[in-house]
Image 1 (cartoon, one colour):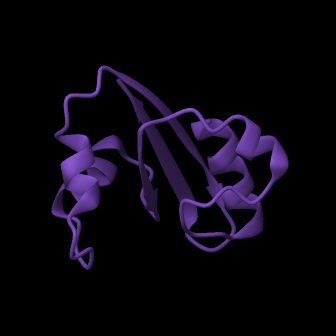
Image 2: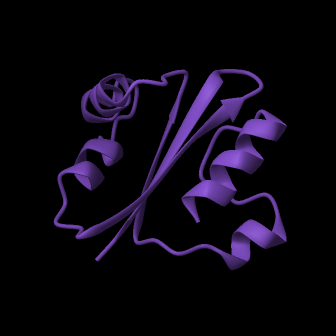
Length: 91
């Protein structure tokens, strides 16, 4: 799920959580999701999600600190931001 979304978003220069292809919609397997753009180092990605600057709901921070017990992560190239990372969380 994370891999499909990261690859598709990266190739299309897309930002967001909506799956753009039927293939990725079929692989939609998660309870919470975080997407990060422009970082390619684990600490930078995590800090960006934890600080959640410009996200009034602090949704990324809340998801990262929730009691999920599984995670799928994919870091891929992005045509606009150089890198994008998708983290899909499951219970």
